[in-house]
Image 1 (tube, one colour):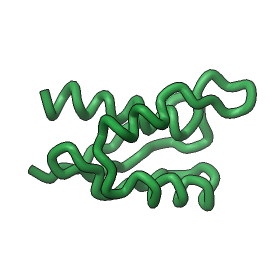
Image 2 (cartoon, helix red, strand yellow; image 1 turned 30 degrees about the vertical axis):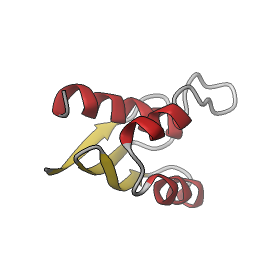
Image 3 (cartoon, rainbow, N blue to C red; image 1 turned 135 degrees about the horizontal axis):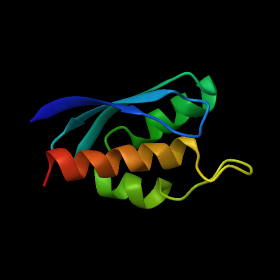
Image 4 (tube, one colour; image 1 turned 90 degrees about the vertical axis):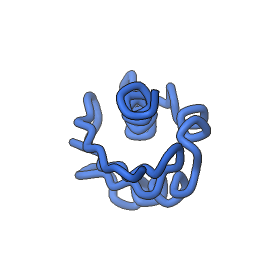
Length: 87
């Protein structure tokens, strides 16, 4: 099953993340706003990765003095996908 989810971010420069998932695998990620080069790099790195592995690698990463970051927000979005769509 393939589906696309839009996640509204909190506490970061990016305003939302669009995630395409097939089963437990991330097919694509697109950040809206934020640091284009870094966020494109993150998107490419997680493409084809299992959701649990991406969460494990990204969860808890902070940005400067912020309590979260764009990678951490992606982990939160992926956790939400698991809870709402894959459980």
